[in-house]
Amino acid sequence: MTLHVALLRAVNVGGRNRVAMADLREMLTDLGFGGARSLLQSGNLVFEGDGHDAAAIERLLEAETAARLTVRTEYLVRDAAAWRAIVAGNPFPREAERDPNRLLLMVLKQAPEPKAIAALTAAMRGPEEVRVEGAHAYIVYPDGIGRSKLTGTLIEQRLGTRGTGRNWNTVLKLAELLHV
Image 1 (tube, rainbow, N blue to C red):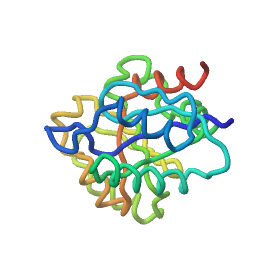
Image 2 (image 1 turned 180 degrees about the horizontal axis):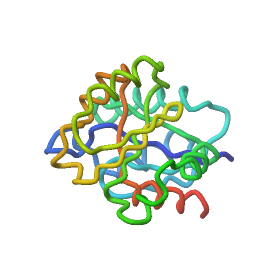
Image 3 (image 1 turned 120 degrees about the vertical axis):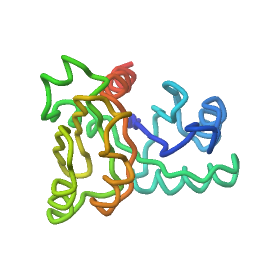
Image 4 (image 1 turned 90 degrees about the vertical axis):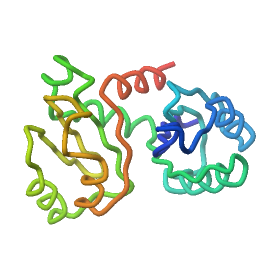
């Protein structure tokens, strides 16, 4: 069995797209995925499953979440090997150690084009640093995410793809769940 990480985009934020993690775990079990576990209430799942690639799992979970739980959201799925590569490929190891809450991993639906990455860089006005590696953006927010003008919406607009972000503490906790 292959272990997967699934991140839900924009659930349980500001009172919208409310979904219980227990309902998501139950849905995964009903769909034949094993060992479903969740982390926090922001849509972080780890589960086992074979026979599907990440894009197929995303489509299945998006459709089933809409049908069963009446929540329309996007899923971003990575297998355990990809998640380990994300952690190992972090271009900001000092920042991760110094203040992991100010390092964000944004998992993207697709890898942006180089010109889109250049557009994001050109739009940045603050002290943030961004490195895009394939379908993942690593973002350092030295003054904190809440105060930054480098918002998720701006990042998605400039990169031309949807995504969801998790701070580095959450990224590492998900990696730990993959080793169980």
